[in-house]
Amino acid sequence: MSTTIEEPRSPKRDLVQEVIAVSGAKPPDNVIVSGAGNLEILIEFIQRGFSHVVCQSSHAPHITTQPADILIAPNLKSEAEIRDVLTLLTRDLRPHGILVISCTPTDSSITELSLRRLLKEGGFTAVKQINCTPDVGTILCARKEAASIARAA
Image 1 (cartoon, rainbow, N blue to C red):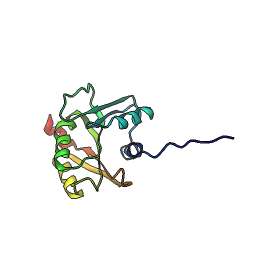
Image 2: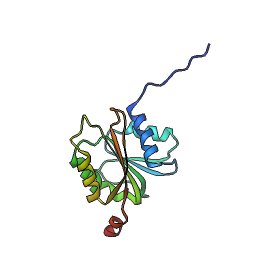
Image 3: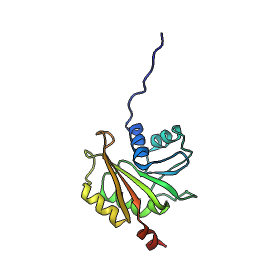
Image 4: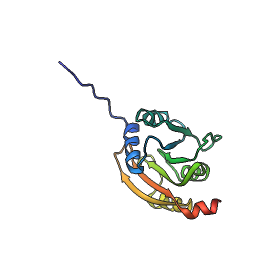
């Protein structure tokens, strides 16, 4: 008799699955996961074949040597956290790179309108929004605009 053991559902696993789907991430991509406490997300990416994944706090020295193709900012709860990501971490994102933000509505004071405004101010164009499970929340995928790249140069 053969039994199959199913792994318990994990919000982090679900988040990584949605991030990969919305961003089009591929294993050779350079990925930065923003914030402390996201080791499980980093491990999930590695288990899916991604070998260039780092966790980076917006308040710590930056260790990336190559620009990131994708910057993931999970579980943001306030406009201040979004501003930190936009001002301190997006400089490590390559031109036309993808920023993926997730917000859980029950824990967040962020509205869709304020999030889109902050992204626009930060030089990003919203590409896609997905409303996922309550554990994962809302995922917004945005691309760095060419105009903001020119301003930064």
